[in-house]
Image 1 (cartoon, chains in turn red, blue):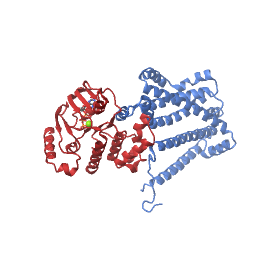
Image 2: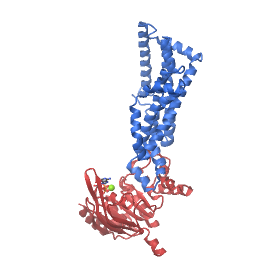
Image 3: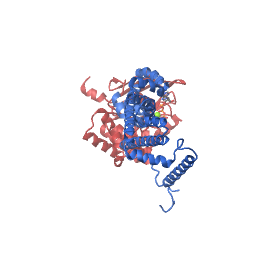
Image 4: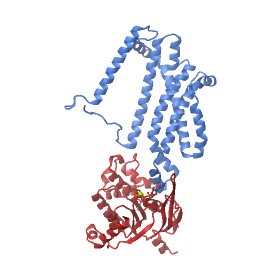
Length: 259
Length: 268
Ligand SMILES: Nc1ncnc2c1ncn2[C@@H]1O[C@H](COP(=O)(O)OP(=O)(O)OP(=O)(O)O)[C@@H](O)[C@H]1O
Ligand SMILES: [Mg+2]
């Protein structure tokens, strides 16, 4: 394999017949059933589907936090067996450490890597500024609202500038306005850095605004219901997207499919 | 003191404490007047004796020895308790081996061991430290274990995603998370060490506040016995305050300016 090919392939995610069975006290639960999807390097893919259909489960499997029951997930030519350093993760819950300040929370990935230096601190400052929390560096999480905490966790996911970003309803707890700002910021970073993003959301509009493609899952067990291309041109703005007829058509299609 | 409510809850509480303490002292005084001073000395007699006993310097060797026994037992029990708690939390095979012994040790009435410990270690500090350590051990082991194993699965998942080593997870997640539990274990251990040291002194000692109680029982010096009670209580309160102070500092360091109960100036 040539070097250039490898570079191109690095952020590619191949999901092959991925199934996941949880064994719980109430018996086996089939959460994911034969998911099949290729995600191109630098692509922005959203996952939508009813609550409990396995969106978080799929993201965990891609992130190497959970092993599949059958099938495989390949990232950049390597089968996922454990968490990958190229991946940044934003969890559905904020999961901040209450004994650390906001700055220390976002610095955590560097600390665990053993790479804390001035550059790391500058990066922490700039991501916190990006999510609008540069004034809260030395506050503790319990002094922040739920939405602010979630933004801190987004900052922590972004701070290492990962090649692949897995985001599990990262803006779920935000008011509409902050969410819009975050969406625009996220697209800016994505366009700049060429990150591959897999983004779980409940919000169809958000999925369409952000993504190249939208993966629709069926209710449990999660199967691929459909994968839709989102044709609206980039760079996107709310005015342009909302003025685009195709946005409303797709929205209707997804809504009916999920109903 | 402030314009709206004439008395804050804080001050009302303080006043009630003083008033009830005065009432209790009066009750004591009244009861003492009804009986022989051999059975119940009056509060004033105890106070006078206390001032004399402490002022003359005769109290200090007793206080100092008992304090040393408590602190030594507490230190040994805490170090072992925390150490074994960490081991049990981190190494599952260690947990399986340790737990049966721990349960047996706990079921064993440790004060009942005092006589044999005196036979083994003599009348010096040894048996006191051993007993204090034995009973200080358990709350620390248990609280350390619970603290280290009660991190949320979300937090563990975060550390897993960040590819933290076991050691990093222990030091950056589990330990900081366990600090409040460990400190509440330390508090209980401190109080139990006091009880342990005093009971061990009952069995065999010629110095220390517990020994003083036994001696005064022998000489029917009830007044002196009460003086020893007061000194033991003061010692216990002092140790507890030290714990509170240290925990306050640690908590401030961990959580910044968060205060546990900032209920100052609540108007009635
Ligand atoms: N640890 C687990 N043990 C057993 N079952 C689980 C576990 N985690 C998830 N499940 C089950 O698997 C299914 C998928 O869960 P998952 O969290 O992936 O759903 P989701 O699509 O992310 O839902 P939501 O949109 O509400 O976040 C659910 O039905 C859930 O009950
Ligand atoms: Mg979910």
